[in-house]
Length: 390
Ligand SMILES: Cc1ncc(COP(=O)(O)O)c(C=O)c1O
Image 1 (cartoon, rainbow, N blue to C red):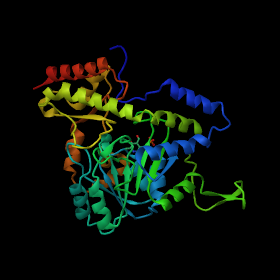
Image 2 (cartoon, rainbow, N blue to C red):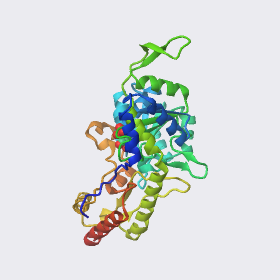
Image 3 (cartoon, rainbow, N blue to C red):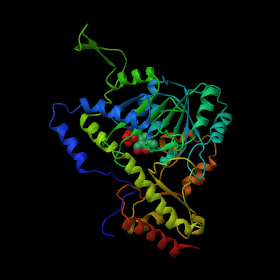
């Protein structure tokens, strides 16, 4: 293999370039007609009532937390295995973070681990459960309604990995529809299901949340509409807001990309099937991702769990050997309590998390990964295992 295979990558075609170029030649670069068009296409695609675009997945989380009124000392439960944005944004608002353990094979929260977190920490009042569909596999579903009813809390789905996923294929319950939650958030970073370069989206069924987010996204501004006209003159500031807007260029790219989302997810599913077929015979050394019935996985990641007890090398050496063969892998994720800023959150022993984290390694998956590249990834893994097995 001459060039390096990344673990994830965008797919850009001439239609994408054409639409972005159209914006570049138009009058609007920031907020123009494509922003609303993108939001409308997105809400149709995921079956949500409202969709609000924003500058990235992190601002989507920040805006969502502000919209539910998350404030100092409010209790938030989130998974130990997560991208850092949820913890960072919660801490920014001085909320009280409790980490819940994850299942050792999926790296995801379960009803049991959330309950354990509530009981061990003697949590009585709960403001928010923030779940994450790790790797693209929709997590929890109707169990979320249980917590919502019992604790009268908000549920936010960090769905940054899972655009294109379905909770139920049969019932066509899509990630982003907010069927089991108050808010879903998305990122359009290049490795995600679709890209807008930087970009994000928030979906909700709640009109008040929708209206609040729209104001906060744009400096806390409400524009003054002139009576009996469609004209606006001046504005008033009603909240401390931000510039978290998505540009028209990014929105155009998003519209074009969203047209191909089904193809992208299909390709990711095909690649995952190939990995399952080609790697299953290494089952003594490698555990493959869980496959849930009737669930559409968006396959943002393909996370192997490697049994290093049966190998003479550790993960760093494994990573380096794959890297020397041009196969880039990644760890998703270091537990939040192992990050220097969040060491104080290590209140319990997180057994599932430790087991998951010590074995996980994400191998390349993205729509344009070719059969030759898949073969190369698989052969490289096989070679290393055969050479270093005990
Ligand atoms: C699960 C998760 N949440 C949030 C984010 C933040 O998104 P962004 O990078 O667009 O700010 C990411 C992005 O990597 C993510 O993977």
